[in-house]
Image (cartoon, rainbow, N blue to C red):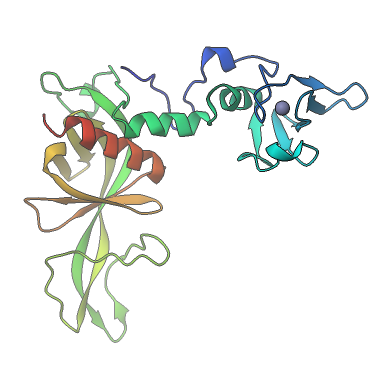
Length: 253
Ligand SMILES: [Zn+2]
């Protein structure tokens, strides 16, 4: 099965959700949501009494007046577009949640665009799944001097210290994360590829030993490579779903 390709914030809603009215109440999935006659920006469900307040192009949900059994609705106090509310009404989840769930099941995007413009030749039966700008980082031992440390260190996420396996620790040195290069990070059904200005990485999915996800990046450990590589990404959760799906479905290739 192919999942329609779009940018992380631009995946397309299901056709039946793309309506200018509420198809059914997103809270109870039973009632109709209609505009209140006396209030121009409030919409109320005629079954559970959930209210959706129109704020700009979005609608803010309040279950305050709901009948009791719907008061703990997951998306209470959320602000979404009408397409998103209709998606929740029809599937129980947001478009993003549905998309990431499909990824994790191995149904990851299939993009037909050739990569020739950035210098990647795909192999037979190989196709593009995702591409975005990224930075490559690697841990490097560095000595610390009284005046401070040399080089640029990269803080992965608050409270996360990046420690690579296989390093001999010396009391006077530590590992810092160094920016190696800037380029494009590409996922295909067979490989994770980084094309930088001076450095490339070509990682076969089946060689990936371990992945670790941080707030704004992820780390790849390989069977054959002592030094892990770290890639910055715009949406770490998106990549976590994408890579876990890729590893699950393409490991045998
Ligand atoms: Zn309702």
